Image 1: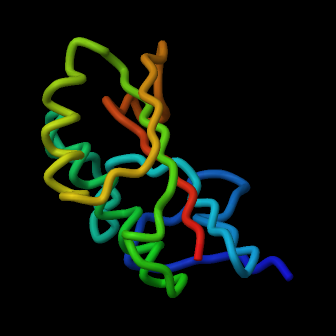
Image 2: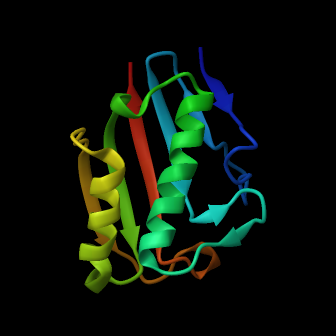
Length: 124
């Protein structure tokens, strides 16, 4: 049984997709831009944008009944790989001792001209 996840605690999808899909044992969280859900504006700077993207993921994870510790894989899309260290510092602070598998790639452009977008998979 698949269930589409939608929460007002994270920005609404800006296209024809769900914030996440829960299969019952796995949660697939769509790429989260660093959009503040209350104002629908982008955070400023790579560290603030990374933090906001991760907070959006956290809101979706919690609305789905999962925990941050259930995240097993993240993909980080960066506008500029030269900002990897700053992104990584914020990312590490968010996850603490929990270390999901991860890929980080540089892309030509992100929606809304964001500096970062993060997606993840969680497993119960």
